[in-house]
Length: 275
Image (cartoon, rainbow, N blue to C red):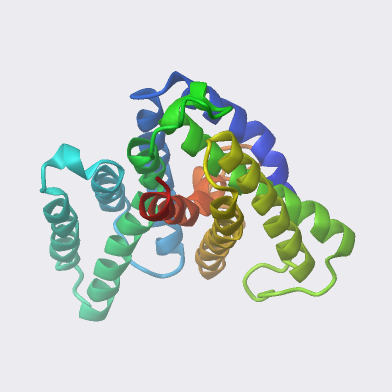
């Protein structure tokens, strides 16, 4: 958790700069993250004993990301594109002589593509978010930047709150078989920090505070689940990090794992409840 909190100081500022530039730069950055994280996922799956196809995971993840980010661009063909990923993964698996290995390769390749492609929900959030009222404090950010920035800060605040409170009070561990550093007090600290930031963010965006108080713990739990999900994959592969791409900080997947779960939850929450 210490590494996650400190790496935010390295990772978040460049992300905020690209966010300030807006589209298409932010979308291009997310696509680059998806491609690299998909490759890392393929390597981890192979390390875990699954004959996944990394290059196909990359191609499939980008296809899934395109549909997740902006299905209107594909004019109704997004679902067929995702179906094509599953079909091609199955066909490639035919090359395995052991059908059990081939079936596992098919499932792992399709899983990797869908899993990483969910990161593009950050772009979807910016495109689908409601407009910011002219009287709101954050009106100059606009809907796209404002809502994406809020989710980035929510995940960051959860990691930071969990780390600080966990260091001070965290003795009782939870799910230690997945990640031995997680504690119940850290979970509480992260959720409190995330909820406080969510309430402040909803106020700045001119939205009811009650929706912020509800979204805070929801995104905090999703971010924690995303972190644990990647930890399962790394433990299965016997790896400490998804890669050594970022010296001292692991790989891209290590940096975006929380967003893979938090972004689609945030996009769905905003689309369903925020007006």
